[in-house]
Image 1 (spheres, rainbow, N blue to C red):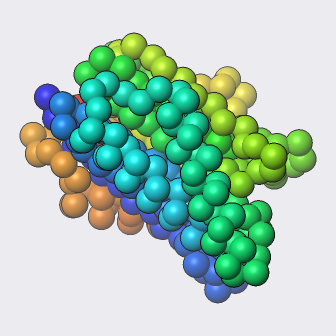
Image 2 (image 1 turned 90 degrees about the horizontal axis):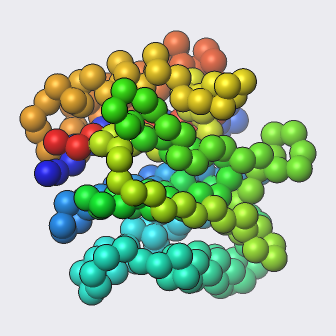
Length: 248
């Protein structure tokens, strides 16, 4: 068993017009014993260093997971992963202090999944999302969460503590998608609280049809073109990040 994936992150038209940079970040790591780790983070548009906060979130969690796999058997406990989030928050606080800023200026969301042959573990803060394919069904493993006010959400840097959701499931899924909120309206039905089959099934057909493993460079380029194209940008002007993972 192995994994293949396509991934892309494109800047939203609103950020292009305002001269801002891409605020999203992501990472994917295939590891020993047929495991895979993926994370998406969306820096808050209102945060001065939101893009850096998103990059740091993906970087730190990727490094900690790879270190864990090399040194330990099985998946990390919830307590260990909570320690990773605490370390991330401490790191952001230290960087903010050196820059004469505040942690809120590094605000970012988090959607991460760890998959082994037997188990699926997710970490989630904010309005990104994760779905998984179980047979012919698409299950929403982490639903986007909004904050108290319209157009608001939760962030890693929330004080005194972030709204962290962690789930552990027996492995029944053979494909996963992680995406930032810029893709949410395309991929999810908010009325039915479900995933759009007509979005995911065509997306995964090229992945399932190849025998290649690892990151699929050609499909990733096509995915980037799609996310930056008029059919998508006509529906959302936000940054868009999408990771599609399929078991070989």
